[in-house]
Amino acid sequence: MEIFIRKNSDLPIYEQVTTQIKALISKGKLSPGEAIPSMRALAKKLGISVITVQRAYDELAKEGFIETIPAKGSFISENCLAFFEEEMTKKLEMHLQSAVQIAHDFDIPITTLHELIDFFNEEED
Image (cartoon, rainbow, N blue to C red; front, side, top):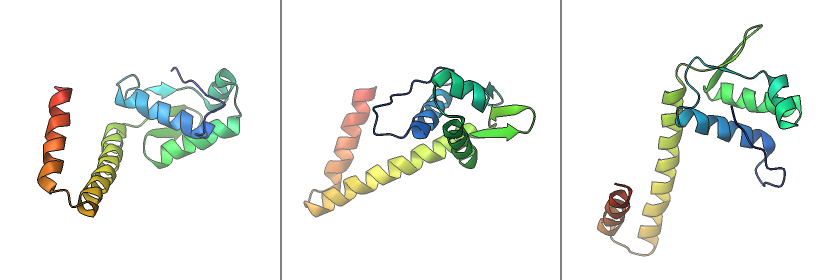
């Protein structure tokens, strides 16, 4: 599991860890049921505090991305993909809500917003 920490980032270290683990899950590089390094092992590898890794793992567990089994370790949750999809849907909703608000604030027709979405969607294909 490759995680890179940027000490000069505005993002707290524990968030860098959680964000990168979520990205590894979304890209299929971490699969449901797969074991992840112990908190101590990951802390040592990254050169960070065990408490920081614990905070990251606690956050991931709270969000449903990992499960920790006492005396066995931490594993990618069987439901992690559903949680990831839900998280991405919430982010998308938030961005779309902002776009609609901007359109309303500047009297831009919603049809223009639809056209922009179609345009950007076609660029991806």
